[in-house]
Amino acid sequence: MNPEQLRNIIEAALFAASEPLNAERLQGLFDEEQQPSRDTLHQILLQLQQDYAGRGIELKEVASGFRFQARQEVSAWVSRLWEEKPQRYTRATLETLALIAYRQPITRAEIEDIRGVTVSSNIIKTLQERDWIRIVGHRDVPGRPAMFATTRHFLNYFNLKSLDELPPLAELMDIDKINQELDLRDPSAGEPTDDAAGDREAAGDMAASHDPDAAAAEDVAVTADDNTAAGYDPAYEPTDA
Image (tube, rainbow, N blue to C red; front, side):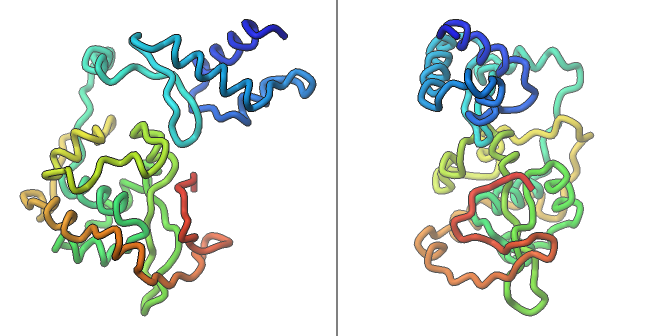
């Protein structure tokens, strides 16, 4: 198979796929004797990224692989294809998601301690239903509270390859800035409502509580999740539940 034909197949597969494709899935498109090497795939993907540079769409690498998508700078026009405008999530939901993303693994009680108010069960349910967070284990304290962390789908949705690409928390002035940075919008929700923390400025609390050195030194004792075969791995990288 010549290089041009190989490139066309990869390009067409990425356009047709409904989800990001990694190297393994791309190799699976071919019979064993025709499978391109990882190095060859890497070169093709790099070439495609260069070919689409400066155009309305781009080839983006996210946590689960590569996908074609509209560039952010044209999203305001592309979004007009959908009649219903997406509603932004409530402030309380954004605060909760931001805390889980930056402080994971974290328990509901720890989130409540930082926010200063009770976390609604509906917020946790909403984030789990969107497959943005999941239970990764239980803290070994009385009551064995569940610990939450973000998923690979969370990274895919927000165009992130890894958690290292999250906007630095120290640079975010308030929760509205987080909303702009991550474009946290609910494409299916109705008019948003908020809980008692809706008018609170939470970013200051989160920034004050986010101490990378302390987090790294924290001794977290975890037991295995009742619904999984293994407990939380300190070197955790988000994966689909």
